[in-house]
Length: 373
Image (cartoon, rainbow, N blue to C red; front, side):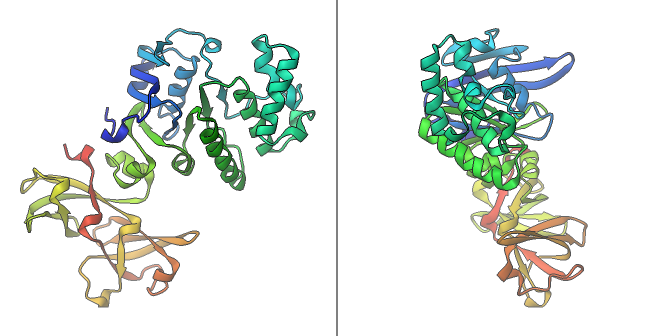
């Protein structure tokens, strides 16, 4: 298992996974999870379906017990400790609100289960209804609310006990796109204002990268990388992470020899480039190397411009707001992605089948350390 060297928690750890394994029969859902979550940190755990992210969250919540290893919460080992004794409320994907209770009664529910008196329940519930800007809906039934309003009720119900940590299992997945963006801002601002640790499970990169202080990338039960959103985006550790992010062009090459004092000349199927020696200080001729170039760092030229690079044919184009992603195919069959502004692309022939030259600067190459051990 690889955890990025940038993963160090900058604050005191409130959660520690110590080589945690979870099996369901012969199936290993989580493999040797070993990481910490800082107090007051917003940590996102992401990956595709079945990667182990929800199982990891459920073990922290006490809904599943580790098969091996230990989980520590505020320094206390919590293996086997009941969910209701952990003070780790969860906002579910389905929200799990009670349709037979009013909004206020839903928010008061956890306090009632803890034996808090009626007047104190009412006071604390009203405080959180106000914080979540849903006071006007206090007497409404849940089925009378919009999706975004229900999200706020679920958050108020989870936070009314004022826990040290809040768990969120894909809470925005059922919302429309515009509501997701609004609720991302609500969650991010709420976490910063309260200083509560948030552990947020999602399969959405936009959600994780826009809100989290650090992100955990999982695949097949294994942690592939932990780091800040910028670290993971700029310096993915291995091929899986680079492919999962979807914005990088991946090349498998061979070191041909030095290029000046600070670079290596690397050949690959379709061309050659220079990689910085700083990223691969101990390379030797003939050594295999895998590197990436982000779509935004790829440059395009017309074939008659005299620019060295890789000849490629336009296969398609995707509009993504202020920019567009061009999909090209080289003569050797490799797909390349190039992301540029519409003004830049307006200067080029972008019709399907048109020929262009793709090139990049050496400093924009990033070697995948997990593929080049």
